[in-house]
Image 1 (cartoon, rainbow over the protein chains, first blue to last red):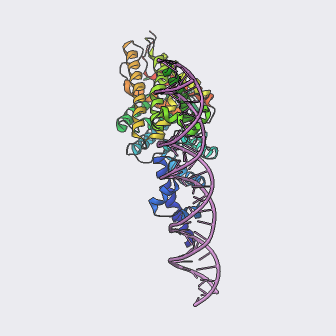
Image 2 (cartoon, each protein chain N blue to C red):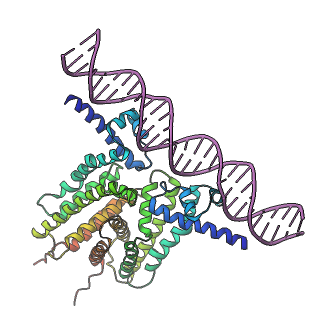
Length: 205
Length: 205
DNA sequence: ACTTAAACCGACTGGCCGGTCGGTAGCGTT
DNA sequence: AACGCTACCGACCGGCCAGTCGGTTTAAGT
């Protein structure tokens, strides 16, 4: 078990650095040696722990990406409060980390999906699974909102989820170069506008 | 001039095929030879007409991308009719071509921006210019809509433009794998919802 | 028929990158 | 002290790719 710890620690270090570099420079434009140089490790170490570059990336998805998407985009919307408020705060926080140029997982997904689309079916399946998880959880949050009387009963939960995911993914691309902070602010304002159009109309009777 | 025509024709063929392949496989994953093979041309022909792969791509942006973004995303919203209707129809058409897996230029921009972000500043500038043009035209269409009494005077035109671009770019990523046609339909329904929240409220008096 | 230049050919180079493999350092076990 | 195993080293291989260059084809001009 002690030995296993050593093994795990090295693999973890490689994966964390790998994700960081793949995110910044893209999968195909990051060589295995790039990652190894960062860690002062050798090719031998890499291929001792992983079968191939693709296997390495697959494990990164399963060990790091999935969990971080959970903690950043899914757990925050799981409560029983007003779903629209939960989602608003969740997006606000996620975009705030994006403003600071940190790893942001809606955008990471967008990047990787674009890079692997039509090129690596296996990895695409993994990435789509994560999107699916996000989507399912958004849908159920919205349905909960309808049940709790915060959201208009007539809205299409899947449609709203799709629209939310779309706008989030898209705004991240638009934030990469031009005044991310201002764009985040504008985006959140419009999101609230949109939410007003689907929340229950409480006429002032 | 006759000679120039030959020259132009060959360069045009290379650029059209180049854009097609860069779009499908990515810039860095498409070799110059890939493009040449498709056209039964040789390396010599390529480097006779273009200085480098990067120069080639820059010319593709300026000669093809810019124009097609104009005809697909900008000209359709330039009229004096109801801005929200114009934009709705424009997005509807653009997403319809996307459903059929054709070149779709909102998505092309997203792809390329992700690929070049942090890697090639020069190309990024060109791509951002196109986004800027799109944005400016959306903003002015919305302002026209406010002036013409179709859109609520209190809305933030830049915010709406950003939100529209975001959602469009994002939904294209989400359409690449899962039931694009159904998602297009859902997306358009939500877009109309959103538009209802920013159009002028005409109480039925 | 001869000249000239534009257009195009394709073998080659140098560098990078994923993956291999024969070795070895360190450490616990006996 | 000898063994054996995990973790790691780094030289090397084969393939790919952007870019080069000496040469050939084509066609217009004279």
